[in-house]
Structure formats: structure tokens, C-alpha cells
Image (cartoon, rainbow, N blue to C red; front, side):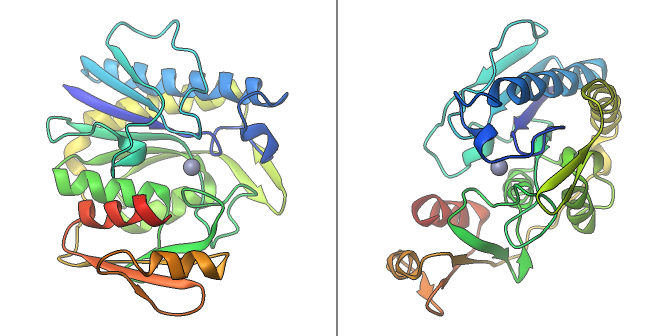
Length: 264
Ligand SMILES: [Zn+2]
């Protein structure tokens, strides 16, 4: 069994400030160590559930946040970026049996985390068919199109609630809650324990998870700067719908993710 784990930074327990998300910042190292610990916990859970190949994508910023020492030998690591539409699930193919997310965060347009954003900080929100779209949702829809179920998510509490609205069977672990500029986090040790058992349970029951991919998918992006909406409006098939907004309708998530890759 082959599983894919995409690991972000802003939904790791304890992560709170934008400065700490930057490689080299004085606070970065401690959160990156926890990012690694949570990724390892998910990998161990998947292996206990029978996975014999575990691909782990460092999916934050540089893609080189944590060192890869000490992981079980079933693990493979995707570091930095493949420069392809699937982005945070780079290299995902239909051969994978399950997709897991660790350290994910609330989307732009929500107040679930002081670090709420979608892909970058240049937009006020991204929507898919009218619903607020998180990084989790866009990659989960992409996985669903390939036939790979998204089975596990850890991150902030509001993101877990957002994700449940799309698939009530998704196993989630909320490691923190955002309140204004603050976060309330569980301990690193408890986060890892709950992620390990949650990932194991999720991979064991991977057949229960399902996301519908609509026949046509419209992505709307509301940029923070009006000139970026104008630029994006020139993408073939895209239309500028207001000073800050642009829309693109695709027949597949891959088409929509390609639009996103060029404009967001
Ligand atoms: Zn992110």
C-alpha cells in the first residue's frame, strides 16, 4: 500500500506568527522540528495500518523546512517544488491508496487562525463553486479526481470543521485553535500521539472517505491588489468579474489547478 502525506507549517501545534514561517527565522527551527515530528507520527500510523511506501511532501514555502533523518525506512521525501499544477501534492498519481494532510491551516477569508491564507497572502479568498476553498479542499478535490481518497487531516480546529462539511468521514485531529492573533495549542507530545492513532485509523478505513468532484468547477480568486486580477483575467478562458476578482471554469481539477498555478 502506497500513501502520500502532504505537510504544511501553519497548522502545526504552536505555530502562531508569520515571521516563524520563514526558514532562517529564530522561531522557525522549533516549529519545523514539530512539523517533522507530526509528519513522522502520521507516517508511523500509516505504516502500522499496512502502508509499505510513504511519500512525504514538505509543502511549505521553501519545501525544505525539516531534515529527513530518523524516519522509518518505508518513507520517501519530496522536498522543494515540482513546478506542476498539483503543487502541495506534487507527484501524486492514481497508484496511491490514500492522501493525508498534516499541519494544514484555515483558508483566506476565514478567522480560524492568525495564519489563515490560501496558497499565499496575496488574496482575500479563493472559492470553488461558490464555497470558500482551503488548500486542503483544492488538493483533496485533485486527489479525488485521480481516485485517491483524502483520509486524514491535522491542523487548526476551524479547518477541521470546514473539511468535515465536505466529507464527514474524514478523520481529523485539531492541534490548535486560533483566536484573533493568538493560538491555543495542545502539547507537541499529545499532537503526535493523536496524529499517529488518527492516521492509523484513517488509513485502515480509507474506503469510507469520498469527495464528489463536480462536472464543472469554477474557481474564483479575490486578490488583495486590483492589478493582479487584471493580469489573471488574461489567462486563456479566465474572466475578470470585478476590480479584484477573476473566475475560471474548468472541466477537471487539473485544468483549474493549472489556472491557479499561473495566476495565484
Ligand atoms: Zn499552507
